[in-house]
Image (cartoon, rainbow, N blue to C red; front, side, top):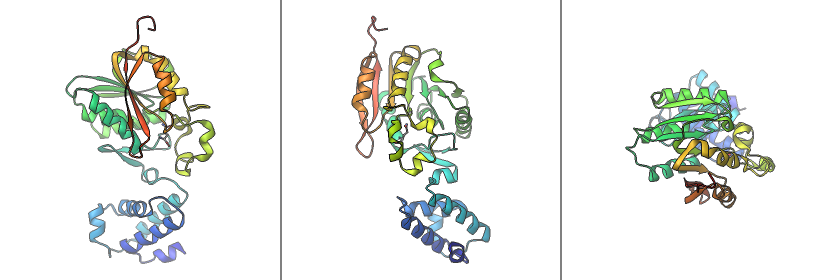
Length: 294
Ligand code: GLN
């Protein structure tokens, strides 16, 4: 039935038909998602799409669009269907090995830019880098900075390296596949991380877009979701300079618990920053251990 309706489809009729299917299926943003798929298959900008509503689709375009639509109806995110996601000011390659970058995580970039001097040759460590979106976006904004992104997934590191290459940042960004607990490094000026922080019991409450498509290793932070914060705090004396800054993404209800963990480790809390939905999303802390703690 879907194929029959798409026969002889124009841009506009295809967009409308797909939008209707997405609406009927309860997809959150049916108009946007349908548009992005149509645009991508035809290689058009949003403006071009609006200018040519009656352009017919070729049979190949119809068939690619039908397969993309079927994938989205199974709740695969548009970013995964297209293999890329816009984050901060650039597009990042996304694969099944990486977390799909979220707009919420841009809060960390905003926070970092508020706290650092753009013209200093700062060093940055990104723990659990995934696509590399946090480190690479920061390096784009801080022209003198350099950084390392680490991830336990070697496949994710390959993706991060590709992203560094396409953004022209290979001279300032390097990537390493390693369990962060094993990390030995000259301490950095900045540590930034969006670690896995969902409690295992929350799995059944996750949207299928997340549960079925983001890698579990990038989502779950143990029974209470806080395991990675405990790891990171243990790791800090080895990787963060005295007076260095820590930017941590946290889950919507975790501010109090994570502050408890960081407070015991010689970190002075500077700010908690909310995402657009109003949830505390980023903790900013300075590493100020007292001698006896260190
Ligand atoms: N922010 C993601 C979500 O809520 C989770 C990713 C993470 O655990 N860092 O789906």
